[in-house]
Amino acid sequence: MYLAKLAISNFRKLKNVEVSFRPGLNVVIGPNNVGKTAVVDALRALLAGADDPYPRFTIDDVHCPKGGKPSGPITFVYTFCDLTLDDEADFMSALKPAAGGLLEAQISVRYADPDQAGRLRVKRWCGNNDDVPLTSDMMENLRGVYLPPLRDAAQGLKPSRTSQLSRLLHLLSDQAGRDLINEELEKLDKALKTHAPLVLTEQSIVGRHKSMLGAQLAQALEIGLSASDFQKLAARTSLLVDSLEIEHNGLGFNNLIFMAVVLSELAKNPEAAFRGLIVEEPEAHLHPQLQSVLLNYLSSIHLDQGEKAVQVFVTSHSPNFASGAKLDTLVCLVETASGVRTFSPGHVSFGPSKREKLERYLDVTRAELFFAGRVIFVEGAGERMLISVLAEKAGYSLREHAVSLISVDGLNFDSFLPLFGETALNVPVAAITDADPPAVEMVAEQPKVAVYPASGDVVTLSDNTAAMKKHEDTFVKVFHGVKTFEYDLALHPELRPLMIAALKELKPQVGADLEKAVDAEIGDAAKAKTLFKGMFERSSNNVQKGSFGQALAAQIADHDGALPCPPYILAAIKHACQVAVPV
Image 1 (cartoon, rainbow, N blue to C red):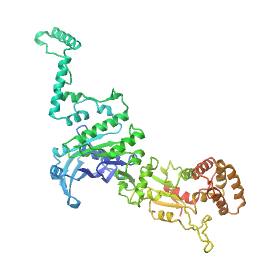
Image 2 (image 1 turned 180 degrees about the vertical axis):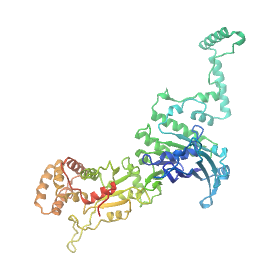
Image 3 (image 1 turned 90 degrees about the horizontal axis):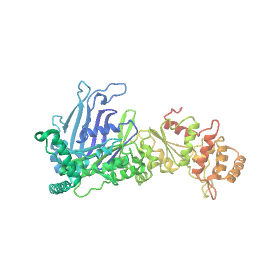
């Protein structure tokens, strides 16, 4: 069985939030201070294990609405699905009807009635009736292990009677195996006692002890192995790493080793009906490559024969984790004007092959979108560099407005935009694209010719841009000029000299020839057409847009004085920054 749903009410920043989970890996992501730790603590309120006491909450943990006061109980409701017949028998009093004639188990935890110190009293029950308590047998059937952030994995692997390593040794041994170990330890103990160093040491201590206390008070002393039987051996067993004590190993690798031990112990545990591993910020102590290795493993944990499935809950604000995870595993926490809510990218409807394309394109840079408060999407790297400097010249710092500027590499907006909007991630999104008006027939039965509009002309949008406009809602807006990004820049007389200067850096002779040709034209549209065709519609050796964008961005950044920003780009920047646009 697995935890399918967790409803959280009145807890810290979470007024009413329902989190959906899947079997296997679940990655809860979101920016800082959005409530990821609250989700972890809600999980721990039911799934805490012997090593991790159930969390205690106070009146300070009760949700406080803006301008109001905290009141009411904290409530967590857990719904478990895919129950076996044995699970149904173990959780009989928690069963409720589910879809398709199946049964699910519902368990609730409530924190209320603070004592004089402000600590809330906890109550756990089954089903809808809080008079049906959660029994100790049920609680033992819910096995969970919590790994906190900045954890000391070496400490968790040190020898002790309750260590994860000791538990695993007990799980993987039967009585016959333990008896054989006991026999071998007894033989070893007897053999060691015959060696001179031990004999002389024992004689020295016993003699001194008798002379100190006398024959009547002296106790019987002997030297032997401290781990003289299986129980003591398990409590004193430790791991060596490349023949070194584990304390001398790196923090990152120690955390991976500790997770391996914990997952082995959980999977081998035959007694628990549910096994969960809760990992908070696994990126701590791990460089990006190890983060990727860990994520790949957690995404498809291999189970040997006889092992049980483990459900894994990970919270992270690392783009490395978000970029490597499958969309179905992600759970986003989003802060909106009405409070925090959840969003599952895996539930989004994409066009054919668009989901797969998005998962391929989600590198570390683009995965930033899951943590962004505001987003501007552009077609390529050149636009990405230029939008940033144009915004600065217009008086808007995208960084200070918490705007993430993300390139979709071409016209792949339809793989990204479905993640945003009124029914998805509620953050302001500006998509800047080209109008790309189609060629028109100027003379009957003659080839169609490209259009080079003037500023303010009404143009026919390309099919792709028109389709993008259909994604618009309160949060998502699409912005375009009259032709392409570079052409729209060239329509401005203040920007053309900078464009020619950037071109001269890349192709000096082409830049010099174009400068003369542009000067010879009359009107902004004609000059823009000549400059655009001379760079990007040449018979051969077109200027690379990425290189040109980088050179032009440097020219704009270094220019003293004000520069115009094309109106549609300025409108996009203002929408992303949430600055009111005059009507």
